[in-house]
Image (cartoon, rainbow, N blue to C red; front, side):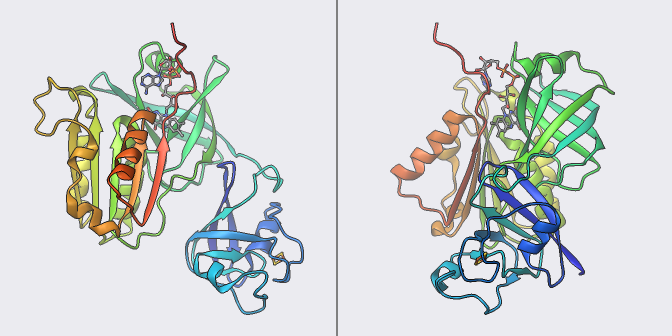
Length: 340
Ligand SMILES: Cc1cc2nc3c(=O)[nH]c(=O)nc-3n(C[C@H](O)[C@H](O)[C@H](O)COP(=O)(O)OP(=O)(O)OC[C@H]3O[C@@H](n4cnc5c(N)ncnc54)[C@H](O)[C@@H]3O)c2cc1C
Ligand code: FES
C-alpha cells in the first residue's frame, strides 16, 4: 500500500480525512493538506502534538523523549503526530478545534434520488452526490440544509462509507421543518450537506459489540453493520432495536439480512407501547441478554432520542454495568418545545 487514509477528528466534532504516504509522518501529511495540527518542536521533544489514536496501526519510532510521551501514555493510545508513521488507515482524535487547526467543515451538494415512506413513521432519503462526496466514518452524521427554511437538521448516515448514494433514515415528525419539506420533496431536488461530523463512530473491533438503537437511532447501526459485513468480521454483534409504537419498527428486513451476511450477528426488536402485541415489550434495557455484556468485555454503542440514551446510561450506572467502552449519540432536536 502506498498511502493510508487518516481521519482527523477534531474536538468540535469536525472530521477531515487526509492521505498519508507510506513512511510519511502524520504531522507532515496534515501540513500538505493545509491542516495545522498543534505542534511546536516537530522533533518529539515538546509533546505539543499529542493526540489520541482511536484505531489503526502505526510506528512511533524511538526518536522522541519520555517527557514528550511516557510509556503509559503510549500504552493508552496517545501518539505524537510529529513522530507517528501510519501502517494502516487510522482515526486520530485531535484535542483542538478544527478552527484552531485552520480547517473547517466540508460542504457537499447533493440531489434527491429517492424518498420512501416507511409505515407512515419514517422516511428513507437517498441522495446522489453532485460535488465533494463526504468521506465519513460509520456512525457519523451530516447537517442537511432544509431548503427555503434557513435552518439545518442533523442526520446520521445509514449508508456505508464509499456507497454510490448517501442514505438517511428520518423520523416523520408532524409539523417538523424537515418532515414537512420531505412531504413535498421530489426526485431531483437539490440539497446542501455539511460534514461529516461527530465522534460516534465504529472503533477497531476487538471484542463483542452491543448495539442499542432507539427509533431512527437505528440509522448509524445500518452503516456500521454494512462495514462489518464487508470486512467479513467474525466478532459477535448483538443489536437491540427499541421503538415506541409497532409502526415505528422499520427496516427490519434490512437488519434481518445481516443474520446471513455477518457471522456472529443477532438482533431483537422491542416495542414500548403497552397495547402492542409484540413478543418483547418495554425498554431495550429489559431485553439485554446476559451473554451480550460478556462480563464487561464488550464495546457498547447507543443511539436514539435523549430520554432513551439517558435511561440506558442510568440503567448501566445503577446496575454497575461497566463495558470496556461505551459510545453514545443523542438525537437532540434542534428546536426545543417551549412549555405552555
Ligand atoms: C447528531 C444527530 C444526529 C441525528 N440523526 C438523526 C437521524 O439519523 N434520523 C432522525 O430521524 N433524526 C436524527 N436526528 C434528529 C434530527 O436532527 C431532527 O431533530 C429531527 O429529524 C426533527 O427535525 P424536524 O425538522 O422534522 O422537526 P423540528 O422542526 O426540528 O421539530 C418540530 C417539533 O417536534 C419536536 N421534536 C423534534 N424531534 C422529535 C422527536 N424525535 N420526537 C418527538 N418530537 C420531536 C421539536 O421539539 C419541535 O417541537 C439527529 C440529531 C442529532 C443531534
Ligand atoms: S511537535 Fe513537539 S513533540 Fe511533536
